[in-house]
Amino acid sequence: MRFVVFLDIDGVLNTRTTVKRTPYGYTGIDDARVKILANAIEKCGGGDIVLSSDWKVMDRNHEDYRYLVSKLGQCGLEISDHTIDKERKRGLGVKEYLELHPEIEEFVILDDQKFDFEHYKKIWERLLITNGIERAEFASRTPAVEAILFRDYIKA
Ligand SMILES: [Mg+2]
Image (cartoon, rainbow, N blue to C red; front, side, top):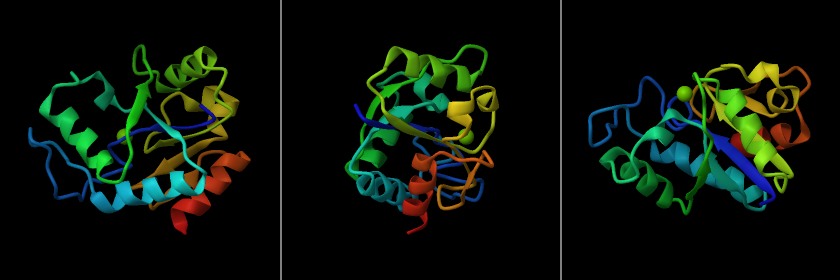
């Protein structure tokens, strides 16, 4: 595993104005946004998706989880793994994941919220704050190269 995208879903692959609904009636996923994600990952030469979103706690057979898997699958994407949070400390979940996976050389985080990410410099510099993936901004004033490139690929 060389390059990883830590992926939030709500606020990244949808926004509050998204009309689509999941099978259970929650805010759905916008195909155009999945496509932007897929294109950006492809331009990076490929990469793995690690789910950091709260969608990760769903049972894998839950209809909404299967909906997510199928939406990603339409663009050739799949979830390879997920982080584990304690007390909604999403940054800590990413940090611990990275420690368990030293083979990860480069990564970015897509999320619409800051959580505790700022506590971890390496993570903060690779965080893109979204309002829908197409509006991705650097969290840090000194973003890492991966974040700069990935944002360019999103905008392209
Ligand atoms: Mg979110």
